[in-house]
Every structure is written in structure tokens, then in C-alpha cells.
Image (cartoon, rainbow, N blue to C red; front, side, top):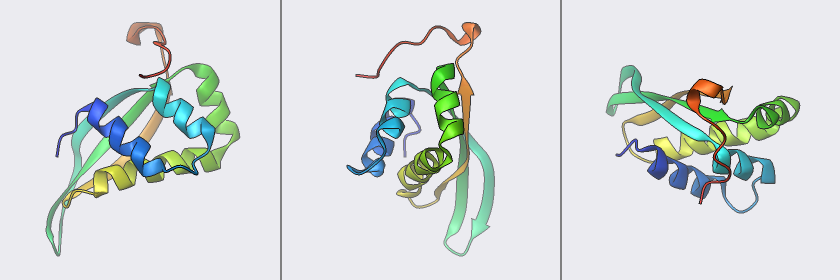
Length: 112
């Protein structure tokens, strides 16, 4: 499994499905995705599970919109969990959503 942010974005958008809230799509389109591999590990009955920490850096207005609509945040978390969990032995450890800061660069606009 590749943990490349671009590939993970594509799998996560697919996991959202066609009935997802529009805000979920906007967040994924505008997010800078950072993956910390192997943030946690454990042995399951099927073997080693590697859990990955995902951080989304999004514009502050989207962070505020997500805080006002927790169900949309839950939808995004579930989509990342499905995207990572589709590969045996991989899981989502946690999803963090942080505002873009000047040190991370400027908002690049929607992903294409």
C-alpha cells in the first residue's frame, strides 16, 4: 500500500461516495494531506496492523465550518478509515484537521 498523499486523497474521495456532504468534498479538495506512517502498531489475530496518523491542513474558514458540523467531520474520518482499511494490515490511527499556517504555505485552492 502506498501512503502517498495524492493516492490517499483519491481513495478517500472514492470512499466518500456520491451521497457525501458537499463540505466533505471541499475539504478534501483543498486539504494538504500529511501522513505519519506507523503511528501505532498491534498484533491482531490476522497479523500485524499498522495504523497511520493523517493530518489535513485546510484554510481556517473550513476548520470553522467543520467545527460547526461535526457529522461532516465524522464522514471524513470514516472515509479515511475505509480508504486505509481497504488494505489488510492497515488502519487509521487518528485524523487531525489543522488550519493552514503561513509556515506551511498559502492555500493552493481546489485540488485538480
